[in-house]
Image (cartoon, rainbow, N blue to C red):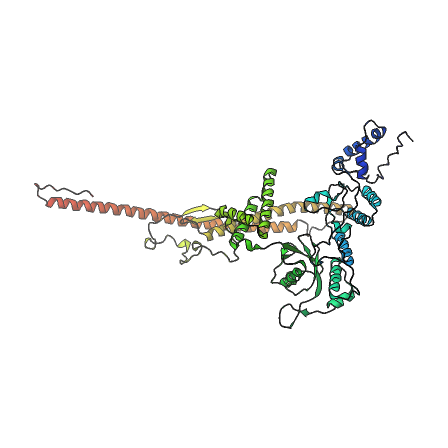
Length: 585
């Protein structure tokens, strides 16, 4: 025992539990000249410096987090004047049973934060309702929850920052006031509980919790019926498939909506039933990341009974924006996303996100009917370039029509029957060019090269490369197989047996490589033969080209000689005293 009433530090095998946040704050606020601060303060500093990964020696919250959100003494909750109106299926005032059901559903449907903190807050809320502030304060200190203002319930609107609790990681936990304290307009229970409205409220509350009594199911008409009356039609029965309760999770963070549907009912019918509970809004259902088509049934879209669908709830109406503006906005947003696809700069990403959030706010205001936002959006759409408003070209499933150059409409002429007579040519003769396209001989008579010939060459080159790749792989396998043969010989020698050489590991790869080599040699031989034939065609074309060139040269010489003779005869018939003036051409 020392003068400071110190205690021995525990071993590393069984570390201490998390110290309360209030104790951490009190330790940091100790005066430095006290003996208690001299003992406790270094321990906090060492644990924070030597345990960057949160070791078992100390789980205290960071000093900066505790200092920013000190644990103020809890206050008694403020009175709740009226029941909440955020649940359309539970119009105020609420009854005691509905209130308890909504409280249970609130804590069961939390998806953010830690489960143990929500459990502790549930106990704290019960203690606050009974007025036991000291016990609630003890649980808050033990769990390490910070309540900067002393108000557990979160505020509304501008007063949102005046309430709420935080865990050791700084994550906020919002608790509505009606979860902590009963509303003042709480309604009395209906006598007997047999009225239709009370049955509907209790049945709906049980659907939220996921459990409905069998008696209520029978009263609702579910039972074991496989069919029910369709919403449309004049009294005719329609097979709606298996009857079950569908849970739709709302995007506006409201209470889940549970409706009774059939697997063969259309999504549009389900949307109408959801709107009956949440009020006049626009709802789109999504399942497994895909928006469900309202004209199809759940069964056609692959829905499985027991799964949850997402209900995207939209406020306002799109009628404030014309269809032309809506289409242009979709194309502009798609174009901007495409431009920012490979954006990595933090500064530019910040600007892009801020612009995106501002655009969402403007769109929400425009849909709600704000005339200023509508004019602002229409002005931006009018100033945007025309190319960003154009819709994205959709890929066509129709096979692309081949160009006319790839279709041979002329009668096929045998290559080796050339050279053709001059009468069948449309102009002077041109000598074809012989070239090698990846060791494949090609005879080109003119440009451009036909697409069919290009496709043929690509196929031949790809086929030969695959054969060479296969040959290299087989050579590697032969090497491994020879090692296996030697190992078998070693094992056979150790056990005193002679290994039969009828078959070995390398026989199969060697035979396969021989077949590949044979195909390669055959292809090379055919290429040589084809090249020789094509060269013969080039030689004949060249010889005939030179012959026709010489004939044209002699023809032109004979024409010039004939023209000169005519001029000489004409000059001889003219008298000597007459000067003949030749007109220049």
